[in-house]
Amino acid sequence: MTAALERISSQRAFGGWHQRWRHESTATRCAMTFGLYLPPQVEDGARVPVVYWLSGLTCTDENFATKAGAQRVAAELGLALVLPDTSPRGEGVPDAERYDLGQGASFYVNATQAPWATHFRMYDYVVDELPTLVEANFPVSDARAIAGHSMGGHGALMVALRNPERYRSASALAPVVNPMQVPWGREAFAQYLGADEAAWQRYDSCALLRAATVPVPMLVDQGGADAFLDTQLQPDALRQAATERDWPLTLRMQPDYDHSYYFVASFIEDHLRFHARHLP
Ligand SMILES: N[C@@H](CCC(=O)N[C@@H](CS)C(=O)NCC(=O)O)C(=O)O
Image 1 (cartoon, protein in one colour):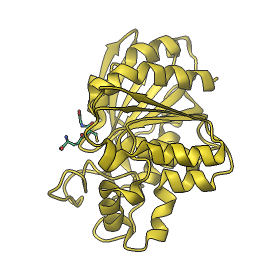
Image 2 (cartoon, rainbow, N blue to C red):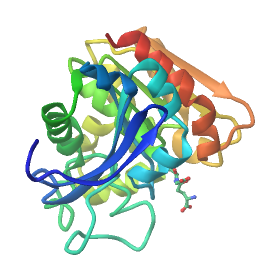
Image 3 (cartoon, helix red, strand yellow):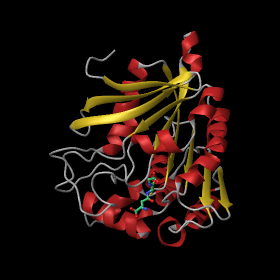
């Protein structure tokens, strides 16, 4: 056990444990908190595959833990869940008045611009530091999948497209698929990455998919009554890129569902079963 890992809480859930942990991150240079669900199968000494979950704007690790109802299915399937926070936080970490920039709104990039560049290195945190920490300290294997919602759906697809050797599958609910072309992404990327849009392409799932060479199976669900559908999400842009590349994407429109965790909770079971089919 790494000495710097501090357990905040541990609760029985569906025969396993839901825990919260805190540690000093070298990537973000501040204390980071993450959620961890360990399914009952770890009690037989098994190392279990892991689904990393990236949440959306304004979330912490707790939104998904308390609202999605994912632990029941993870317990059945023998999957661990790792739930990072959505940004660095705390005193000394820059923030913005608006909800879609700063703390709670990292967009999972490595910022290069002041004042963000010192702490907002969530790409490195999610891709490298957190899996290394989790695999060294808990009974989980290196068989990984990644999933997320909204800004976190962007994060999950983008991270998998850039690291196809590290993830067996990726999925998203109501993801921001083309951040370079929509207000949430354009405003955040300008702040975090600067004005040169060439640097934005490395974080844009549509651009990445057009250049990708190693396929990663993907499942995307999008609610038809999502208030952000036309302005921020635009899943047809991903469908178009996937069709051009003959990419293994299943994109499902779900009529009447909105952007909330009622939508996430309704389809998370399908997503975990999808990942379990690709994990050993
Ligand atoms: N309704 C929010 C927009 C942010 C939002 O919808 N956040 C989504 C992710 S993009 C979320 O998961 N919110 C937290 C929750 O529903 O528990 C606002 O205008 O402040």
